[in-house]
Image 1: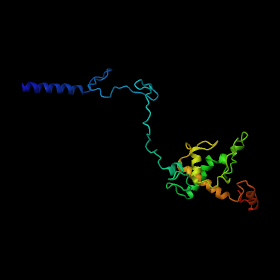
Image 2: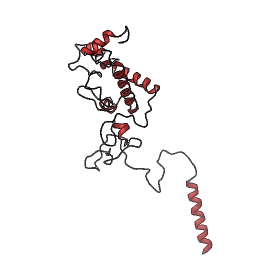
Image 3: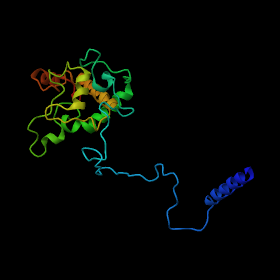
Image 4: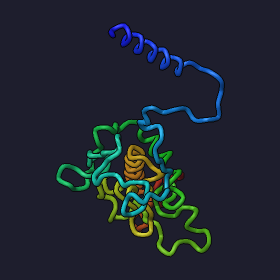
Length: 215
């Protein structure tokens, strides 16, 4: 009896082994003893799926989900605000004030800001004189209202836009927004007493300055 059981098991094992051997090719699908997940319903993006109440195959992320690397919980660096929630005039720890930052700020400013605000920051860029100009003149950074604004203010305007100016958050990374803000401050400091504020006092100072100094 024992010998017969052993023989049966051996024969069954041999048959199973033969099924694993590669034989003649066939157009018929292979035999799946265990289906597992080899055959299942799948959906492409934008497909209809009647399993869900909204009939959408694509599922919305769980509320509050943040993609890895996009938490942005540093309000100073990502929003220009300090621990008290107010706009800050200090650079974040990730941004070092040096010649490289100023050079980067000037470069990015001339690309994104100068077409409207011009390279001196007086709001007289080349696009303002084309097609009849703008209904709302771009702001001059040298006007009295903007001179005391903290760096965080310019960072926020670049990020969110203001008035008729649209947001540049999609075009300019956070680090470059800080660089541009620093360059705006450099323009303000450089424009003092050079007539860049277009006031009467500034014009007098500009007239009294040596030739070429107001450029």
